[in-house]
Length: 341
Image 1 (cartoon, rainbow, N blue to C red):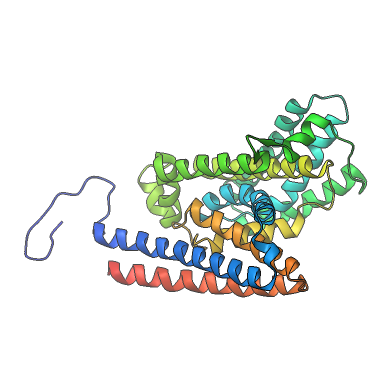
Image 2: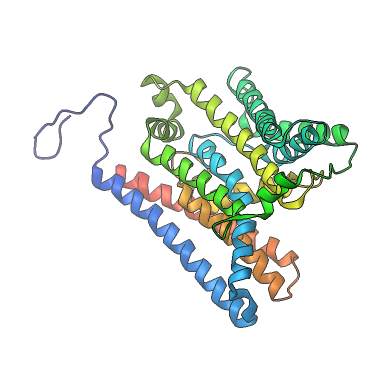
């Protein structure tokens, strides 16, 4: 390749001619978005504490983190799916099905550890079916997963007859309500999932391939990346973790709830991913940003509740933030592409 000044350099096979400085600028833009989210979190916290000092109490802040964890567990694999250029609307119904499936198994003689595994397996199978439909039948991801969402929502109602499944074993419930070394088990689960997905995305060939897939699917195929296999793993992971999050919620509440999950979990998880800096167009995103997005949602809901403000305002605020985040992503991508020209 020839560069300015007539000098030439040899590029490694499969690499691009984008200067490292330009790539690092893209990373700095991402970092700035995460720093902005931290600033917003602090601002909301200060305003909520000024309105009602109980918001800043340690017990209340712990409640905020607990509320964010379930969304974060769903959003971690969803971040990878979106970075890879895909989309998954089905996570809300898989969340519900995972919780009620595990609860059903436990109330029908299956020991709770095995019931958890089976509940996660149910979610993984649904994710695999999504991948097959998308890659083999070439149905767009948004149509496939939206169809799965509605279909599985109906399955849950038929399966449970609209009745929550309870009671559940005490040992299982303690996973959701208990703590280890003073840290709630639910938060520990969220931290472990977050660390695992961060390492996969940032430190493995799999994560590199996911970014390549979302950046340019055709180029990824031509460079030998197994696109269909990668898609399969992404959607299987999304289904498995959505079901796991539903099981965590069942442990917190002591029952497999038919009304859990659904549209609210789907939209909250997707919004946390996008607000956290993951590009709707693929190729860009971080698990750290997603964590901050999930915490921001939980903080806003809690702050409004503590301040005695109607929860309807939460939807308005979150909707406005979401539109702003997607607009910011469009501007950011425009700047990055202009640097490459």
